Image (tube, rainbow, N blue to C red; front, side, top):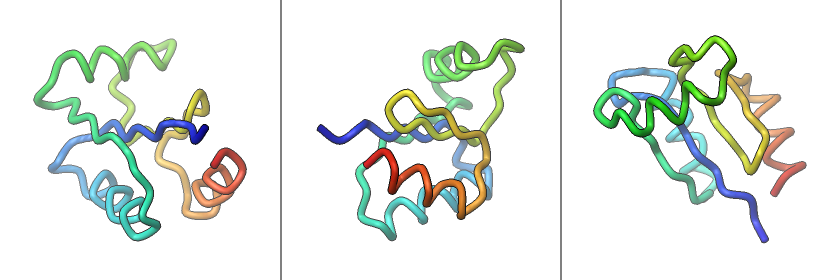
Length: 82
């Protein structure tokens, strides 16, 4: 079974938009969680970090957490986990 990909970010964030396009270009299904307009998503993101900050963009692939990863790191984890 393929791990679920989640992207925590905001529509106004250029890096979030970059990751959305990156995942779409690879035809990967993902869930976009807008932390600016949905408090439940913001709280879920805070729970991923000990400092409870809204560190976005953050991607999760299954249980792996990637905060603002480079293309190289994101590609590596996608290939490893999917």
